[in-house]
Image (cartoon, rainbow, N blue to C red):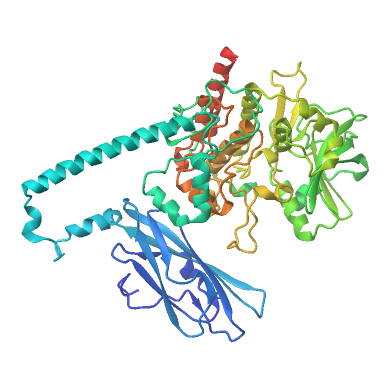
Length: 605
């Protein structure tokens, strides 16, 4: 600390097995003239060898942390030192955050100690060019003195020939790059393309990605192919996205009546739901519910089933419809429930996530549940629904993917009717508008959804005499989604024990980094949802490992333009993925842009 802060003292992060939470809370500043930080450590517990794992993460590639220590091993019993080097690799100046993640465990107990150290490295603007500036150091005695300042005629000739050769090489390189790019633009060539190479480099060596960033690949996007084309290919669509084909983003104008709308909406603490009060308020008679033998989808401890509810005219306050159904009619439901072998932890988490939107008033495009019922040791959360079920499965059915994992669903009349669906651009834009309205409704109450995805939507078909829209979608909670769609969630090995797996492929970069959610992070997730719609339920960023998502997004990687997506709509989609949350459009701006696109679409189709 004497060298870095000018204070003759020592900083103890962990002492006698106790983590100094106050010291780890604040970042330790590393000055521009400091390149290494030295740490001293040793094990003080005589209960067998203590194992450690350490990892350094930099949010920006302007600083590359290098740990001069094996990333895994045994904590020394004697006091030893190791250092962390902070290399300012970029050309930007400023403060850059680096986090060191430690996980300490020992064989005598199953418990482990996990803590994070934060550092702020200050880089000067010249740091990224030190290798070039080194020869200009006035204190460098190896310079040629007067001989370097005198240029002979022979040297001038060599210099001219070398410059001409360099110019020819650059021209040939540009020509080859142009021809290579034109071949990639053909839909039957360039299979895998730069995307597979780029994804492989992320999986293989993160250091290689850092070198790519220094050579101007920050806008490179992942090229994804689909073997199935579920829609007609519009003449305006672009099969691949490249750095040179970045869409022209729409100019978002302030919408009427939104001048006082905040740029970013944060979640209100007043929206915390009293679970006990909600369960008492929404309780219904179990004898009125008849579960069908049809399982929509099932996981390890949860499942979604179909049911009928015979209403008696009592307790319909949770209904999302304005008119009450006749008491003699059966109401079709889709229900979330737990299996009998689920434990109390699963029960409490399920109830908390299922009731998270209880305080939100009913809306047509937001699927509030009707009544929960708890019988024996499993709950039943019901949603009024007489349609195709989960939007994710419906989109995959339209793409021709069979549901082999849940063969019971094949007996469902609603699911079978989905195989005959043909989705038009009108249908996709209509669904996008409906889910955007649901998101607007949540944000109006200061509630952030955090997981807007096709797996958390329901879809049904409307009669022709009710609406111009053929399909009707609703956004609902994400209870059980981690269990029902485990491949779409990821839990880091370095995560705290109480942390849940997260849908990192759908999450905004700031949410991945700090686990902070707001309306801007919902906008990013909504953009990924739009990509899901136009790809019929494909996995976003499928060529990138989930642990590398933060690095890939920081480098500028974005989902490529789907085959069937018009350029104008992809530009709207792309605007949701701005790295700066303040630069992303608001829900009202998105609604205006989508409505304008829909109006233009109706003129030509």
